[in-house]
Image 1 (cartoon, rainbow, N blue to C red):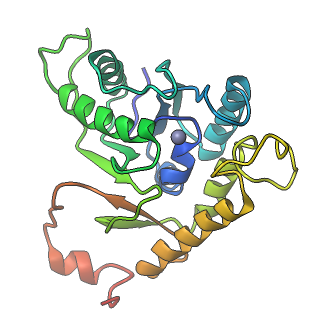
Image 2: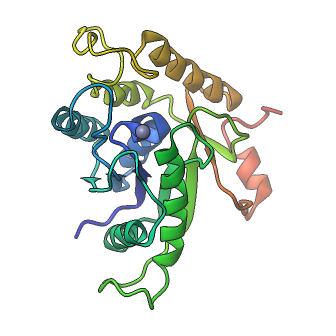
Length: 246
Ligand SMILES: [Zn+2]
C-alpha cells in the first residue's frame, strides 16, 4: 500500500485545487509523497457529469503529480458526520499514514465542506485509537491543517507558492466543466459561483494578496488550531528569506 507524507481530504473533486494545490505541488517537488481524497463524486454538481468530473479529476491529479488520488462513495450533498463516514476516513488514514492532512476550514459556504472538516478532525483523532478495530495498525497524523475558502481568517502560516502557482491554475482548469476556460466548452451549461472569469481572477488575486503578506509573488494561507512550537526563534526568524518584514 502506498503511503503519503501529505494528504488533502475534501468533499468534492476540484476543491483541493483551490484549497492547497500550490503547496501540494511544492511538497511533491521537495520529494514528498502527496495524495488527495475526495469524499464524493460531486454527482449533484450543476455542470458536467460524474464521468466528466472523474476524467477531469484524473487530469488534475496528473498535473499535481499526486502519488495517490481517490474518490470515495459518500453521497454528494449529504456528507454526514456519522460513524460510517468516520470509519471510511479512519481506514484511509491508516492505509496512507499521512504526516499532515489538509482539509477545508470548518467555517465555509458549502455544508459538505464544513462537514468534511469536522469529519476529518474526528477521524484523524480516532485513527490513533488502537481499540477502534479496522484490521489495520493505528495511525494519528501529526497535524490537521485548515485551508482557506470563501471566508478569510488570520493564517497561522502562509506557504510561498510562487514557483507552483501556474501549475495550481492548470490543475484547477483541468476541471473544464467547472471553471472558466477559454475553450468555451461547457459555457452553455449555466453559470455557477465558480464558473465565471471573475472567479478565476479572484483566485489569482487572493494568491497575490497572501503572497504579498510574506514578500512572495503568490501564497497559500493555512490555519492550525494549536500554537506552533519554534525551537530556536533566532535561527527561525533571522534565517528566513523574508526576515525584515516587520
Ligand atoms: Zn466542493
